[in-house]
Amino acid sequence: MRTEPTWRIPVGILLLLAALAVYVVVIARYAPSLIGAWPVLAQTVVYLVLGVVWLLPLRRFLIWMETGRTSPPDENDRS
Image 1: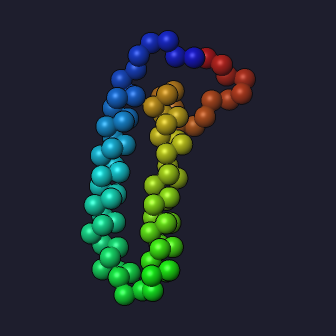
Image 2 (image 1 turned 120 degrees about the vertical axis):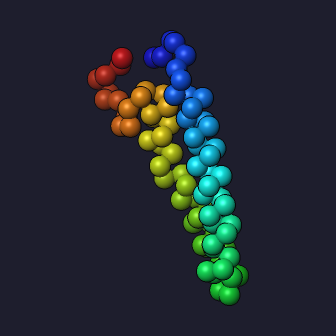
């Protein structure tokens, strides 16, 4: 368990906010022109998928913020 503060947490939060802002701007800029003529239900599905897809890399990113590694620690590794 971590007892000392680490630089990765504030930097990670800033990187996460910046990446989400870029993702939102890209989606808001390009998605309407690509799917704007689709039926409303199809657009809803696309926006739901795009709203969840940013969560995919989040686990490894949070592990990095906490441990400094991108993979989860072993069950036997309690350091």
